[in-house]
Image (cartoon, rainbow, N blue to C red; front, side, top):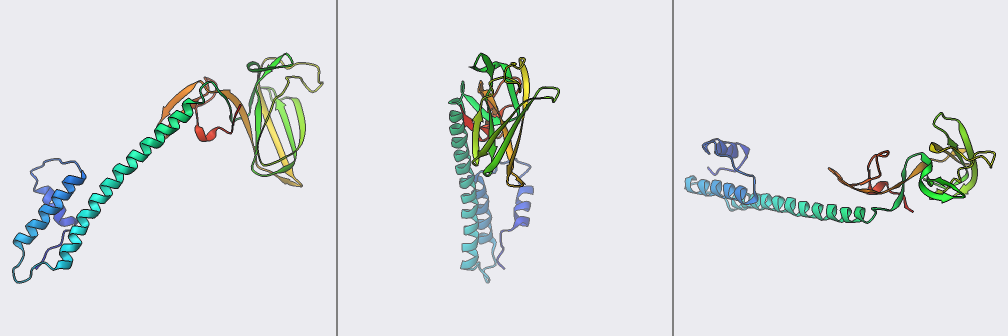
Amino acid sequence: MANTIDNSVLSNMNLGAAGKQTQNTSQELSDSFMTLLITQLKNQDPTKPMENAEMTSQLAQINTVNGIQDLNKTLEGITGQIDAGQTLQAAALIGQGVLVPGDRVLVGQGADDVEGVATTPFGVELSEPADQVKITITNEAGVIVRSFDVGALDAGVESFTWDGTLDDGQTSAPSGSYRVRIEATQGDESVPVTALTYAQVGGIVKAANGPQLDLGATLDPVELSDVRQIL
């Protein structure tokens, strides 16, 4: 009676291999299948030889295993090329200013000089249009120091620069870190909104899921997909 190659046969073969450890390469798996097939042909019952369909099926198994191994190698190569491309894209951003999710605004450090007060830009990302957008800036204690009604905005990303003056329009905000809170509505409904913070890309960090942008000591590294705008 003809035998078929199944998991039990493979298991027995491995047990009889005198404890030798082999790598699961395409060639070794192919050799193992072929050895089993030849052994079956040599030891089959002459009165009940293996059917052509069975022979074809088992050869197809060999080709399937080989194909899977080759596909894995191809995917590994493609993944490597994608990672290399992302690293090149990330490297091109070194020294550039970017907007990424966050609510921080700095006064007196790390930004352009606007009317004598250095402030970092910030941004707003809307998932859909809004007919009313309000921006509130608070100090570290949570006290409101400046608020803006910017009116209607389309969906997407908009960048803004605060001149550093307080609500009286004359007093300049002390140097330090401030927070941005954004409210957006369309009619009576709230619109999902994300605050964006400014940072300068200082380098590239290698991570398990691909290259990340080093934004300095005060911000965590971010992925390329986190960049909403390059300034």
